Image 1 (cartoon, rainbow, N blue to C red):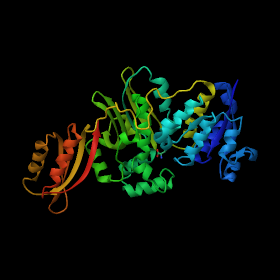
Image 2 (tube, rainbow, N blue to C red):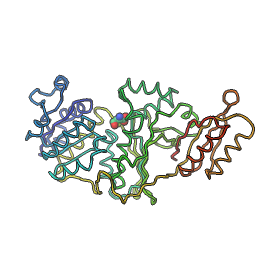
Image 3 (tube, protein in one colour):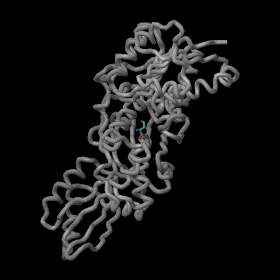
Image 4 (tube, protein in one colour):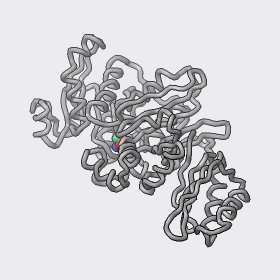
Amino acid sequence: MKKAGVAILGLGVVGGGTYQILTEKREYFKKTQGVDLTVECVLEKNVERAKQLGVEESRIASSIEEVVANPNVDIVVEVIGGTGVAKTFVTKALMSGKTVVTSNKELFAKHWPELEEEAKKMNAGLFFEASCVGGVPIIRTLQEGMQANKILSIKGIINGTTNYILTKMAYEGWSYEEALKEAQRLGYAEFNPTADVEGFDATYKLSILSSLAFNKKICIENVYREGITGINKEDIAYGKEMGYTLKLLGIGKDTENGVEVRVHPTFVRNDDPLAAVNDSFNAVHLVGDAVGEIMLYGRGAGALPTGSAIVSDVIFAAKHDRYFYASFENNQKGNKETKFVDDFTSKYYLRLSVADKPGVLSKISGVFAKNNVSLKEVKQVAGEEGKAQIIITTHCCHESLVKKTLAKLDALDEVFEVQGTIRIED
Ligand code: HSE
C-alpha cells in the first residue's frame, strides 16, 4: 500500500477540518483509496489549539525548517493564508522537494508561476483544488474531466460571503449594512470585509479558474473587478419585479474577439440555475464545446468542505508520481499574444432619478437613441414631490456606449442622479 506523511501548516478553521478528515478517515482511505495517510507534524503557534484537536505534543513542530527536514513528511498542506509567511513556507517546502497542497487563492493567483518553477525543479507536486470554490471540485473537473472540450465560458458564484449578503438583501429586505453585519456575526465575512465585498477574493479565483479553462495565463490585472458595496436593496427589488436576481458573478468567456474576464454584480434571469444558488453556497456553470453546459454546486468555504478539497489533493498526490503543471506559458505577466476584450457587450439595468414633468422621458430616450443604445423595457415609478424614478433595461450593447449615454444623461438638468447601473447576463 502507498504511504504518505503529511504536515499541516496552520491549524485554523480549515487546518482543523483537514486534520480531522485525515485522522478520522485513515482506515477508510486505506480501504477505498489504497493509501495510508498519516499526519506526521503540524506547524501551529497556538499549541493549545493543536492539543485540543488531538495532536500529540511531539508532532507539533516549532519551525518550517523542522517540518521540511522531517524525512517522514512527503506532502505539506498550507492553510495559513495571505502572501507573507505562507509564501516563504511554501517556497521552502517546494525547495526541499516536498509536494505542496494549498487552499491559498491569493498566494496562488499572485505567485503561481514562481511557485510552479520551484516545484518543477524538484519534481514536486503543487496542488490547489481548495483555492477555488472550497469543497466544489472545480479544478479537478477542469483538469481531469473536461479535457475533450474547448471551454467557451465559465460563469460562477465564487464568493459565499457576498452571496449570503445579496440573498438576505433580496429575500429579507435587509440593507447592505444589515446583511454585512450578520455575515460578520456568522463568521462568513471578516472584521475587514474588503477582500470579499470588493470582489478581490472572486478575482483571485477567476484568474486561476479562467487560466485553466482557457489554457492561457490570466493575471489578476486582466480581470475587471467591481464589488457589491454600491448595491442597494431598491435595485434588487426592482430587478426582481422585472424577472431578475442579483448575484456577484465571476464571468470568463473565450470568444473570437479575445478573452473576457470580469467580476461584478450581475442580474441573472430568475429561472437561471444560478439564481437558485442562495446563502453562502457557490456554483460554477461551464460551457464546453463537446459536453455543452454543466454546473457544479456546493459549499465554497468552511472547515470540512474546504478540508474535503485539500484531502482530495493529498490523496491524488499520494497516488501519483508524476504531477500536473500548467500546460500554458505560465508567466507572471501572462502571454503577450493573449488578446483581451476591453469593451465587452452586455445588457444593462439602469435606474435614474429624474424631474417628473412633461417631455423628460422623450428627452432621456433620445439620448439613448443618439448613442445607439436600444431600450428593452422602461418603467416609471412616482417618487417624492416633483421627482420620478425611471428604470430601464437595454438590449445588448457595448459598455463604452452605455458609459457615454450615462455621462450625457448626467449632464441633463432633468436627471438628478443615476442611482443604479447593473449588467444583465441572460
Ligand atoms: N471568503 C470566501 C468566501 C471563502 O466568502 O467565499 C474562501 O474563499
